[in-house]
Image (cartoon, rainbow, N blue to C red; front, top):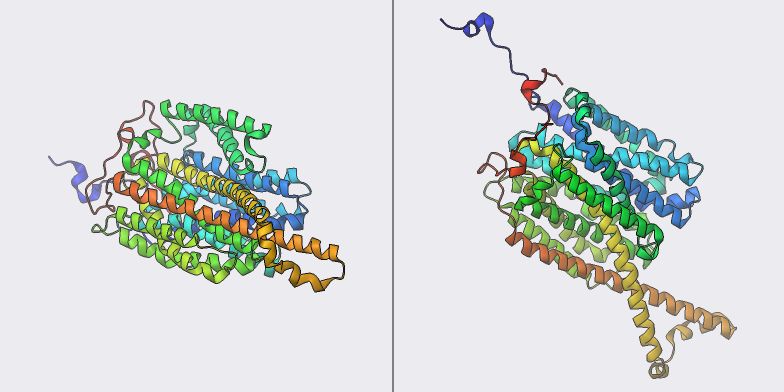
Amino acid sequence: MEPAASSPSAAPPAQPSYIPPFGMRTIVGCLGMLLAVHVAGFNEHITEIGLADIRGAMHIGHDEGTWFTSIYESFNIAAMAFTPWFYMTFSIYRFSIFMTAVLAMLSLPLPFMPDMISLCFLRAAQGLSAGCLPPVLMTVMLKYLPPPIKVFGIGGYAMSATFGPNLGGPLEAMWFEHVGWRWLYWEVIPLSIIAIAMMAYGLPRDPVHLERFRKFNWRGFFIGVPSIICVVTVLYQGDRLDWFRSPVISHLTFWGGALFLGFLFHEWHHHSPFFRLQYWKNRNITMALLTLVAVLIICGLMLEVPMTYLEAVRGYRPIQAAPVALTVALPQLIMLPLTAALCNSARVDCRYVLAFGMSCLALSAFLGTWLTPDWVRDNFYVMQGLQIFGQPMVVIPVLMLATMSLGPADGPFISGMVNMLKGMANAFATAIFEILLRRREQYHSTMLLDRAGNNATSLSGMGDPIHAAISNTSPDSDHVARNTLQIFHTYLHEQSITLALVDIYFVVMCICIFYVALTAVLPKRVYPPGKGPAPAIPAAAREPDPEPDPEPTPSSIPATAH
């Protein structure tokens, strides 16, 4: 006797689907999520690049202005590590819209804050909301896009590391020069409204799972958040406070480092961690995470060097230096999809693409070692042209190595780790740049003054061209002598900064060459989804938790619509 379910009148109900069918609505939702992440990135980079203008408009001192940046970044990075647990609990749809709305609303009162305490409080809250968005984007791209175009989703996520940072300077120049300094804060509002509308229309309305709070990792949360805040604050404030000669830096380093080590130990042994450290046993993931940190440090340094040179040596305003950044930013809209299409082919090994991209960055840094005080904006265009190819050809293969080795359920456990390291890389880039610039500038300044003093007698017969040029400007010989000495020290300062920036380019070149060699040794090949052998899932990802806390499966939730 046949079961009743086989009759047409008693057809079995459709299986509930947690992931909706792919279509135009899903594309709109994913693009809205991508726009929200770029809005958060623009808010970060515009206010950081335009800090001098903000300080002047709001009457903020230099030291207070450094806290304006470091507080935002510390809460931003801390949020990235713990976001996956919260969007799995409150749902991607609600969590993303709420955090984007908070980011936009907090920008309204920021220009009117009466003191630094209230300003830093709002910046901390804004950094927290902005840091919650990039991990959601990674999950959305990997979860809602079908396998044939999943690599293009990775390319979309890579835009936050290549397109967004390079566009921050030109946007800052446009808002400040043509609209007003308050729009350095308010520029997120119209874009956030558009992003919220797109996400509300396109993202699936997945259910809320508040019961997950019964198994919330409270100890890891209260250990991890302050430890990350302490570590990031040390990286941003260390050079200004002269590192361990400062009691503040010493205490933050000791207690923050101890808490961070305790946090890592706790996450390793906890049954429901915020991210799985066992993934580091996988060779591809280890290579990908190490390379991601290095690439973001390299990109940060290579963006900072020309801007610092043009502003400190040539006296450019941000609007005058903007074409240098736009040269890299705008072509990414074409290069990222092209690189994703290249890596999406089973015949192309993404490791070779990674090595070629890193070689382009190394060549760009090598050309930068020829920097002299006579360079102008046009001299950087060849170097920037190499970065047009190098940056996407490095970032996309790195993300493929990190994500294509995992299964679908591993996304929340790797997303927080990748984004936290991404934020940490920006902090490391800032610290490394400040250390190298200050120390190498002091070294070259001392060496140049020493050479000038030792050779003053032998050079005296050649005359003093500076004195000869300005001797007719004043009848007072003492005044001319003072001006001569001031001009000499100006030339000396420009030369020492230039030589320090050349040293930074040399360091970047060495890092690129090291990672080209490491690419040939460490990773195994990964294939685009559905175009090669099944990925080998790490043992840590295959083993179930003693108290499982996974994302809901299709059979455990009701059917939901868009």
